[in-house]
Image 1 (cartoon, rainbow, N blue to C red):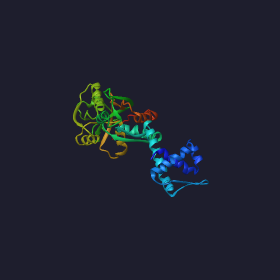
Image 2: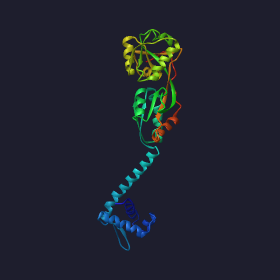
Image 3: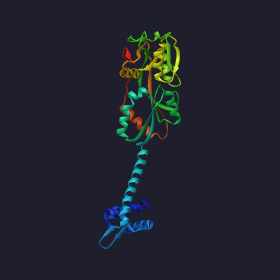
Image 4: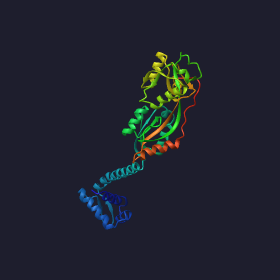
Length: 310
């Protein structure tokens, strides 16, 4: 059964007149009749009955019309979907993100995506920087929102905003009531850091600040999850580190929190949030996301405040 024969039949069903149906399809009337005959031979039934005064659908024709219109609807939907996908306006894009991206970037970007590209499904995956970049390289992610500029030519990237890092201590720690602490006072303080493989930019920012302050860090634990920082800091009176975004959210919702976030200065440790992507040939879906990212930016981190409750 040929699709053009189905369209010929539906034109006849619409007009109930061979001349008008042929004109609608820009065909001659004999050509239209031949297409109907071929369709009827394929189906083995008569679809249209006509006399010198009247054209009407047979019972078989009436039943076939319902299914034929659904077929045309599905074909048009498939055609439209293919065109939308080719233009980067439908399909699925996988985006990795970290905590600051979830707080300050993704809400407005997702709203813009829904408005401009409603047929594009965005799958979000929260991961640390290291796992994100490995997933980006393997193709498991299309876009990564990560700390630090990727140190490889395999990716393209763009800086989005800067985050300050703060110290996290238990509420009985001697720093808990202070509005801020010079970084040099970390000398001799046992510290907790993220494993460098999971978050190299954050790790390096702390170590670089220590170098600028002229001190060495006493790192007694390297951890793989932010919740572990609070547990260790509370239990052992250690000094941990967190982004200003995470510290402010914790302070807003924790109520009787067991830890306090204390600003650091001289120097203030900072880390940059980047968007990174592979430079693929077919990046239309990815470019749709980047287009929305550009449209809703620029982005900014919350200001560093004194004595933030965590």
